[in-house]
Length: 316
Image 1 (cartoon, rainbow, N blue to C red):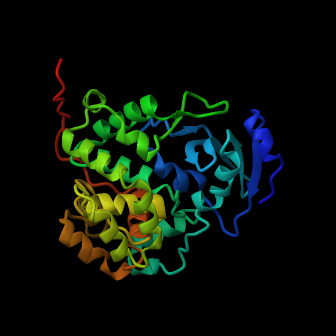
Image 2 (image 1 turned 30 degrees about the vertical axis):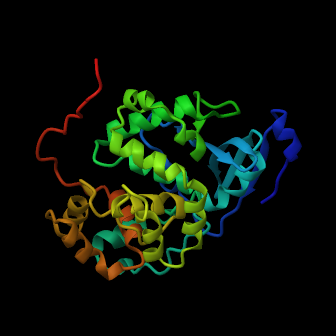
Image 3 (image 1 turned 90 degrees about the vertical axis):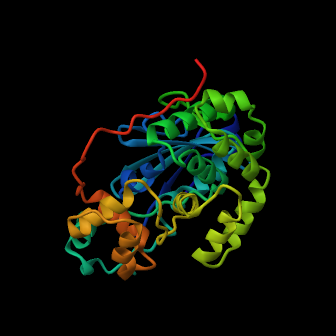
């Protein structure tokens, strides 16, 4: 990468820029936009061909804007953490991901999806606690409820993102700041006590969790690190590994829709979690990549009834 401005200038409002030239095709939207938690996510905005991401760094908050131009990824960053933010660009764009072990020929749906999506890579943020907190908010509720809670809490307790963002954006709160969110703010955001207590407990161990997860040698070890936290099960652990570590084998067992979608794409019928794991077994080591390809294939099980209406237990 080549930086075209000095770090000291970023603090004064002058952005830093860099260009990432991957050795392989990168579909920026398919790779990075998966991190967005709904259309109103204050941490990630897709504005035309530009992906904006607000983040914390060891040097302070930063905003990066990513665009794909002629096979290159051009990145611009603002804020005290701009230099650190630019260092994350290759990993965000899948530089740590290797799709070569995937044998797509095992199933025609996977083969066709791989052919049509050569630029799909698995993104990696290395922001363990942010991924964990957002996954905990998504436990046992609809996506709409979880995304609304994430937007409410991050916008109120996060850090205002620097730079000319297309709308107000915020970097997620640091673990210590999640720990200080008052009970009534959780309630107003529609977060149930089990989820808020789980995040608060995890926040007390935020840095040690990140260190232990990065030091873990195997997926099983990573799951043990995460599920050692009260209130964190295998679904939450998998979702955290997917976003923070770009884990190519993570499978979100217990997801309300995933087993049905995998089963329908590969067999034409619904399956349960056990059936999904059996279908994915030939791709052990690459199961998350297969899931991503299925979701990119356009094959969807027909909806059988009305959408689940979210419950609101807040006082009026």
